[in-house]
Length: 192
Image (cartoon, one colour):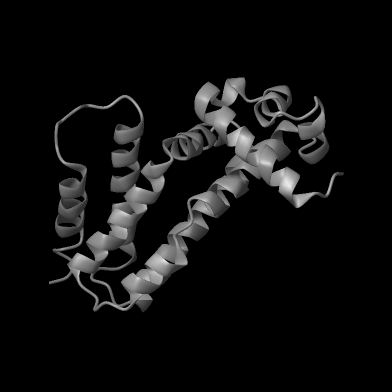
């Protein structure tokens, strides 16, 4: 198996673009080779099966949409409040909409995981760990609410992102205001 980490990253990034643009059906080793501009067969050397390719893309996507440590440090210096929670959520929405193809690729991976048990296991583990990490951070930071409210925000933001980055209901509401209202309505009552 090939061991060049930079090439693996290049291929994973190309795979995410293919997944975002062509969907799971369009994701093939050859399509990734073409998108990356590498010789045919290169992707197969790094990701020998479709399952390995999907797992590699799942791993890479979370590295790409991870929070900026400097932003987290700045937010972490503030006193816990609903306003701080709103700013954390604003950062999440900004990161996941800055490169819309990444979030679309994540939606594609989640849909594909519903049909592929091996991906469901791998991606599900990553998603559950992400939620657990978010809940632990929330509690450690002394933010209002608890694990349940963090779950509510995950559900709500996933729906908001789906609407922003796919075919929208076009309700006409300002995204920043929606984020603020999600926090105040879903967490505000728990803060009392």
